[in-house]
Length: 342
Image (cartoon, rainbow, N blue to C red; front, top):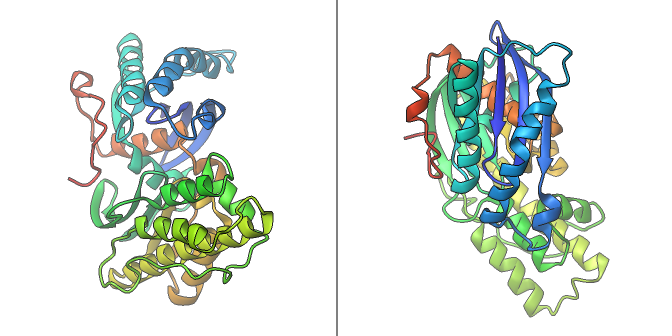
């Protein structure tokens, strides 16, 4: 079956078409209209601006996507992000999807944005997920550990108590004047830095739960700059501080994830979210899984599927469709606070 995916949860207008067959999904086409340059001016996403950009981009993007075929492809269902995210942005995607589903007389599947990231590593993957599985989702707004006993069966076992890891990257980048988005900027600067240059905390690392906290680390970076009178405009200083900050974030994420995987005796470790594009995190996870979790399959998404994409939403929609997890389009609403695990 072919599913059209629509994603407008934040500042990316994305549409995609995937094919689902025998429990596998593959991308046929995906398009994204980015707003990065617009929000770089303010150093962050302005909800009203993001929503207006979605309104102007969504229909032309769908038309362009479908126009890539000489004959309009048969679409069996539409999958749309219904939450969590920015309310006004979500509304644009949801209402567009509802209108298209009505016009084309096809089922509409609502998808949780976090669930999309969870299935991003399944795109173009030939091997099925072996359960139980543990998912680490790390993005600008989310840092969560989710236990899966099957498709659609989710148990939240850990989450950030305050700032997400991606937010910590963004705010520390802002402190150093590295630009927006902060994650890639810190990662690039860290390549030439010394991870031991500055001593920074590893929040909640020794606690026996699987929760996270990155607010204290962000504050520690701020006070390090102030107390040491660091000239962050100096490339060497920025590189060292970036490397030290990145090392702290990566160590906490990896250690807690490995610990949880051991406790729940998982067969698959799934990772997803924008922060998973970070090379240091990918390398650290790969090394620790190989060392400490023999026999566990690590599923890292291709880097092009780590940001917010409609491909991942369509993929998650496919598995929801197979599970008959579908509600009436009239009941589908934009829900900025929709929790994947109730």
